[in-house]
Image (cartoon, rainbow, N blue to C red; front, side, top):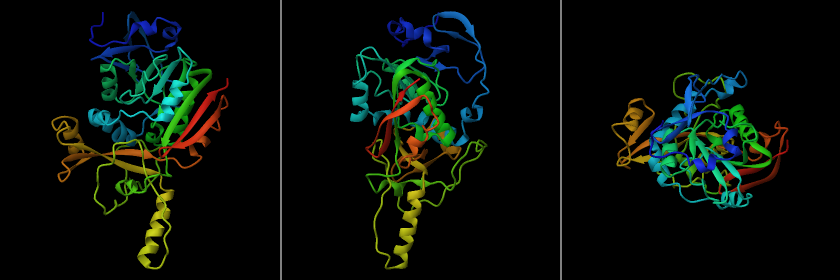
Length: 360
């Protein structure tokens, strides 16, 4: 028997969806960890039988997490989880509208659920969330949500498991085009025919024109082969001091029309032109000293060079990897997915968004 103080609500699994869950899982410290990446045998909840997970040859390179994501996405969100969660409570109206429109009894899969702010938003639906960060999943679990740790490019559900799926501000953390496409394919795969998928990503085209100066543009665009050790190269950051980014899920670039009357103005125009073509960034997160676990994750990050100290702001500064999307890029990733069609696409709060319907 597994003893724990926070478990998945069994009432929601006493239905056909329970049998559709294709993998076994285990509760550890009230967090449901999926063992999809391990070849170990583990006990399933409420079942003494063992399950061996065999590796799939299909898309193994796509499913192999590049080091840039491990260091500058996974590690960062584990370290900043409580502070990040405290800033994530407002629901986007477009997402709320999508969830509220779903039929009674729908099973919604939230891939990259973060702190779970959308889980349970529609009380007439069932929700299951997953995220790559155990720390964020622990927060969700403590709030009573049904959640597990999983990778967006390898979702732990059988084909046709859910009635709808959402991916809110997730795909821009994937560092290659193939991984971003695979994540979309997975979202389509796990919903039933006729099911809908809502995806939102940060945009290159932005409403706020100031935040871009606080980001560090990367010098190269990462590809599948970039999985080795070391840190990515970055261009010299803006001479402007780093400031705390407003705690919202918005990003920023901008366009200013200038008259080229002086050489320095011409240089500014050239730099601005380059910025509009730039899509790979490090976006800082300032974790206040009083929120940082100096003896834990943050101290290790500082020692490893994965974070820096800003004594003026009293914060440990983490860099988060982002690939910001250009207009039409999100739609183009769906062109090879033959069993889905785009039913809506829009720009909202500096994000590109699409809604897909599974057709077969």
